[in-house]
Image (tube, rainbow, N blue to C red):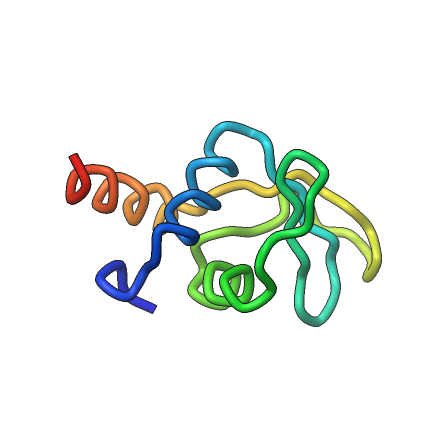
Length: 85
């Protein structure tokens, strides 16, 4: 997914992860929570599959790790922030 296809939801999720508020439940399709609330599954898949977000450390399926931005995720967030002012 390229940044022009991101919604405000994607941008908010990236910001929350950058702020250290995201957690990933690892598995075949990771699940993201922010502030203890589960996020949109499709948007989470977009971010993980797009290599913008990853767990802070590897773990077995079903483990929970802090979510962190990849270099691409940091760049995408910067581009989205610049585009929205």
